[in-house]
Length: 220
Image (cartoon, rainbow, N blue to C red; front, side, top):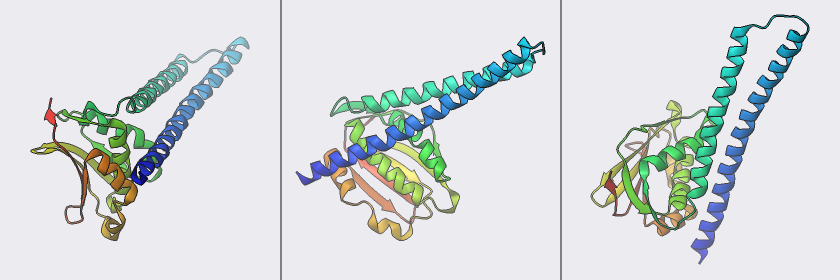
């Protein structure tokens, strides 16, 4: 029962961290739109006083607003996918899409730490049946550790592959893994692994973390 308590606590913390990051990004989008709206108001006041409007400047402002609307739409789409990841205990998912969602959710955290995330969104689909939310939670704690262990390259590369026994996800370029590997995974990660029947392997020589998932994986 204790490991279920750890999973619940980890899930709440994960949900809170991601929700806070999403809301922060949305507030930034609204702030930029509001700033451009203020500039448009100033231009309208100038026009009312007889000053001519600069069409090029108006076009730039409109473009800025459109870009922020597109950015906001992407953020909300990620938020929607994240929220629906908790809908079912077990469902068939595309690991490529899940890793893409993880990257999108983690961009702000990575930026704050000066880390770049690399992921090929056009890689082949790999379908697995699992708990999307719990797997996202496990992958987040792995990515969180990987960003700390990224070393001087400040880059973490993510990838997924089909294996004979299921699937494997990789977090690479971890030149700074060093002695930190001794403290990871800890009990919260072990509890998540037990539920998913997953396994985390740290390889300091290859400078990567590999997360193995059980059978049922297939390429789409």
